Image (cartoon, rainbow over all chains, first blue to last red; front, side, top):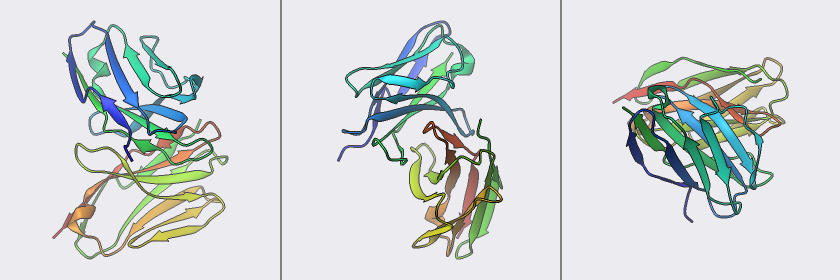
Length: 113
Length: 111
C-alpha cells in the first residue's frame, strides 16, 4: 500500500515568510509525528497527534511553529515568520494505534534564504 | 526526559567484516528500541526493533541486543556489504510514544 507522503518535497522561502508543510499518513494510522532533521544531524521530535488531538507539543521550538490535523488524516505543520535556523528537513511519521513502529515519509527540505 | 547517546559517530569497515553500533539511554521506563537506516537523501527506514521484554533479536545479517539493567542496546551487522553503507540511528520510546533519537552513525563499507 501507499506509504507516508509529504509535500512539497522542497521549499525555498525568504526569511520572514510563512510556510505550510503537509503530511499524508498511511491509511488507517491514527498516530502522526513530526520531526526535524538539520543537516548532518539526528532527528528532533516536534509534535505528536493521536487522532486530531496533540497530547504532546513539547518539542515545538517556538510559538512560530504550529500544527494541526483534521479528519484524523492529513496534518499541516506551519512555520510563521521563518528564520534561517528553521532550514532543515521536516519529516513526518505515522503508526497504528497501540503499535510502536513508526514509518517515515520522504520529508520536506526547507531552505530559508 | 529521555536522552539517547550513540557511538561511534562514524564507522568504516571492510566488506565482509562485522559492524557494531552502541547506544545508551537514560529513562528506565523506555520500553521500545528501534533502529533506522537512512541512505543519503532518503527517508529513515525501520530495519529492526526490540522490546524491553526481550534480550536479543535477529533478522538475517542484523541483530539487536538489549541490556535493560545497564540501559544500553546495540546493533550488530555481520558480513557487511557496500549497500549497508548509510547513517544508522537508534531510538528509544517512552510512555508518550515519542521517539528520542541518537545522533547517528555513518557506516562506510569499503569493497
